Image 1 (tube, rainbow, N blue to C red):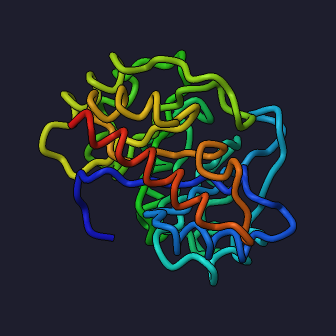
Image 2 (cartoon, rainbow, N blue to C red):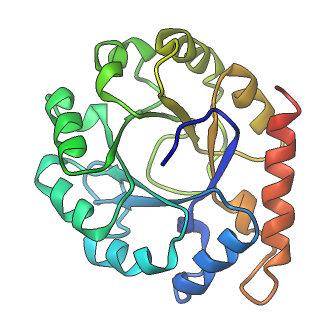
Length: 228
C-alpha cells in the first residue's frame, strides 16, 4: 500500500448480497472501488454479529485492492494474529474497546498490517493525539457502530481537528457511516480521504447489474472531489 491523500471509496460489504460475497467483491472492484471494507462485529462491543477470521480469509482471494478490516469487537488483542493470517491489509480497532490502544497498534503493525484506530461519535479527536505516530489510519464513526444504513452524524469539526493534529504524517482519515453524495463533500472538505459507503454503493445494483455499483461509486467520488 502506497500512501496518498486522493479520495478513496471503500464499499462496505455489510450491504452486499451475503449469499454471493465473492462475486460482489469482484463486481465492486471492477466498477472502481479502491478498497474493500469489512465490518467485524461481535454482539458484545456492538449490538450485531457479522464476520470472523474464517469469513475474512474466504474473502481474501477475491480482494485484489486493499482489504480494510474494521474490528468492532472487544477485546481486540487476542484476535490480531487471526486477522493477519486471514489476509487483512489494514486492521482497525476501536479506542473504546480496551485500555491499551498503544499496545494494540504496536501488535497490529508487528503482525504485518497497517494499523487503524476508530473513534465513536462521542469520543473526541484528542483521544488519539498520543497515538498518531503508531497509526496509519484514523476511522471517524459518523454513526453509532453496529448497523448499516444509519443516518449520518456530522463530525466535520472532529475531522478538521484530526487533520490539523496529523500534520504531515502519512495517516489516512477514514469516514464510516452514512456516506453518500450529500455527505461526502462535507467530510472531504474537512480532510477525510477514505470514504466507507455501504448502502450508497450497493443500492439498486447486483452482480447481474454491476454498472449501478459503478454509477454509485462515481457519484460519491465526484461529490467528494467537488469539495476539494
